[in-house]
Image (tube, rainbow, N blue to C red; front, side, top):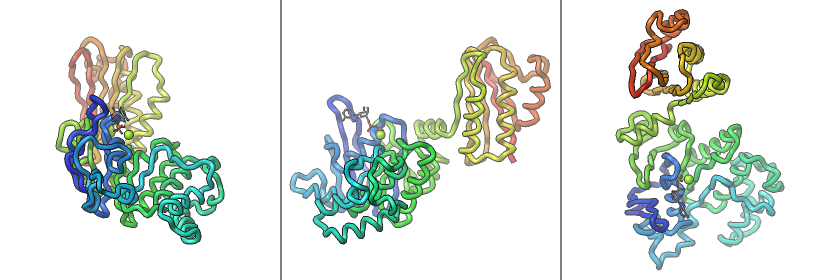
Length: 360
Ligand code: ADP
Ligand code: MG
């Protein structure tokens, strides 16, 4: 359906997209993930010509988007794009936001358009807001309207650029649910997102973009559980893990506990694992003597269920896991009884503790 050949985009001297080639089939749902600034938005914007590519070719159903002879507006109508920031017309009602495009651009009749608009508003759960104005809606509702408005133009492909990243956390799921619904209906979609669980669940393929190229692509299982290339591995590991830096003895313990709790929820860890982790975090910090530079890191592997806790602390070599070294032997026993394995090394001026927390 979409065929991309050697696509490149430069902004002056800045090379943002380098020679991207890929094909997207009808009915596929592609998630694009990757660090910020690597060209994900630019890639989407080139696909529907919000940006003019510097080189290469984009074919939609065999028709070239970049050929001067092509009826570009017509080809573009096949693609709808949903942005981070909704972009609704604030002076029009929700219903009018949905009907203005079909009436003006597709030259459709009023009655037909209104009927269709109501169907779409029902689909996104907002039929009762038809006569409200955008400002009267929450962010999540606005984004659902934006999706319905896109659908009103009867696109064949939907492009989403981080559709939930401008939303309050409480509103993310209502928007993701609507997108899921469209997936079930077989829409072809390309979605740039930071919602990794969502990407894993809905995508047929995942593109990992890095430094202007599709660095690695594969099924969600391949990319999230078994990435092959170095930078993909690093990225996946980083989004999986929690890192926390401490630079003084007066560190914010409650903030740290909150982060650990969120981490446990995100990875759906059991009550036992969460309790162990909270206790280990506290006890490991009790064993420290120098708080000027401590890095804590937590990571969980969905593949084998390993829960790893690493504490790297600047100082002279001293293994606090040895009996009698720290004042607190009870704390030490508490830690050891809740870990499958404990390890210690001294590296780059840091005492590094590596613990694997006991699971189920
Ligand atoms: P991502 O969506 O992956 O975060 P973007 O596609 O937004 O990345 O941006 C990639 C790079 O292109 C960034 O360095 C950004 O500053 C640059 N860029 C994006 N749009 C423009 C523009 N219109 N003019 C100049 N530079 C741009
Ligand atoms: Mg972006």
